Length: 306
Image (cartoon, rainbow, N blue to C red; front, side):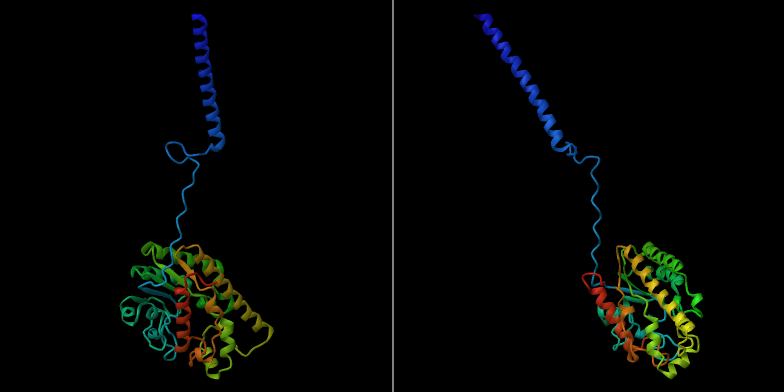
């Protein structure tokens, strides 16, 4: 009897041992089947990907503004013939009729001390990197860009800046800014519709006389000519402007702190009231005010304009 009792106890012990081992294997197998990539005791697995960096939120109320660009941002021909008039600049001017972007964002008093105009009349995109270096030294919260018209406005259509060079120069301009002002926002205005400006200005005799001085000859030369060669020339300039605007949008989209105007300036139909009474091509005070309004709408929008 004692031996049978002992054998029975041993059998029960062996059975318990085998059962425990089987359960252990089952548990291990179940764990692997339910999540072979599940984090172990030490945390995430080697295959886990890092979380992407969040896109910076656009500040609709920057407290300082620097401007780069060409004659439009310098207020050329808005106050007197063939002269800059930066006080009426759409970007940083102080003129009460214009109510520049800086004034709208910062107020008249602060705009005097916290806005800077580095644009240059006649500048092309090749000059923008140097302007951006100067703008970056101001440590602005917002930099406005309006450039490209002079790349299309050349003595001839053949002399226009190649699209590839235009792209390379704009990319370099943004790199220059990021070296000194990595957190500055950038707002890019599109190149105006030069063909539309030709169409609006060619009805003015005085304007056409000023055009003969060489203003945007690629588009404005022989303004009344409607032959095939003249039409082809103007179409070539228009296509180049559209290509420049594509570049501005595409390059800007790669910079997380850059926003373009969605073609707002290109699409705006300037009329006689918005054009200089001296050259019927550059914006007048009224035109500068329209540009300021377009820029303010784009900068303060919660989402980019499309």
